Amino acid sequence: MAANATIKHVAREAGVSVATVSRVMNESSLVTEHTRVQVLEVATRLGYVPHGGARSLITNRTSTIGVLLPDLYGEFFSEVIRGIDQTARRHHYHVLVSSSHADQKDIEAVLRSMRGRVDGLILMVPEIQVPPAVALLPEDFPLVLVNCSDESGHHDAITVANYDGAYAMTMHLLGLRHRQIAMITGTPRNLDAAERLRGYRAALKDAGISPDGALELSGDFSETSGFHAAVELARRPFRPSAVFAANDAMAIGALSAFRDAGLSVPNDVAVVGFDDIPMARFVEPPLSSVHVDISALGECATLRLLQAMQQPEVHEVRREIMPTTLVVRRSCGTQ
Image (cartoon, rainbow, N blue to C red):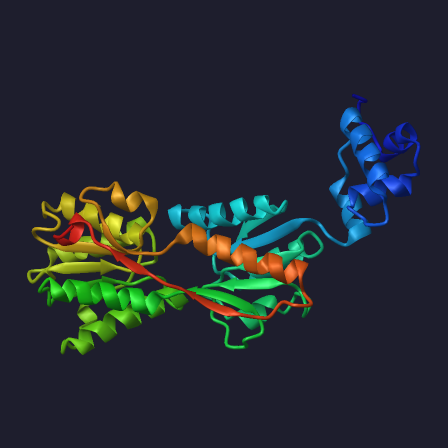
């Protein structure tokens, strides 16, 4: 094995031109099978690795997809990334991940830095209107939106059935004879949070119960916000019999707060969440939740992006909704 073997070393050893080696490495059809095998054998023996930057200059491809998420903290985002990364690797692509923290300037800076470095982009910005966010990208740049607010219809989009899931979970609690059901909401202006709150309110109305603003407590999808909301509820003289947190992280925070207050879940108060992150089944009591196949969400987005990148001539923009299901565990009093 040659130290720091270059394309010139491979060409000289294989008895071909540098251009021929380049064609082989870029999988050109202009090379015979015999030459391809010969060049690859020499490259392997010398330990030659094509330079990604040089290759991208020739092919105008980086074999990399970009991923922009609102945050990288927590099991939800780690599961999304896992689904994206595993799918990308199966198709011989790398993944470049960044976060925006729902800040317009951060989003613009990340998009500028990714231009020329990725072949396509998966974008999750549920708190920002999409058209201004993607104005920095070329009009034909492959892009898939995940849980984003976009009324243009110009981009592939995948959303979770947030409204349906929240409606079904609230109806489940109503079926358990709960009438005072509190909701710990998600981040203001967040599309997921708004749809989950809408589903909760609709279920109450359909059951003949007027939504009570006093039972809607603000959260930000973090464990800490769920904890503080539950502390407030525990101190009330007339405590709700059930709490629906807009995601599992806040529900887990609520479980801790109720335990600290000496309240039993579900005997004193039922608690349910949304997303069904892996941790949900391991807390005590195990958490009832609206199940989202989070890893599959990342996989689906990646497959849509790869199709747009690799087959632009047949690709058609599509909007998909990922269904949700209820997973009932002990935290709401039934299994």
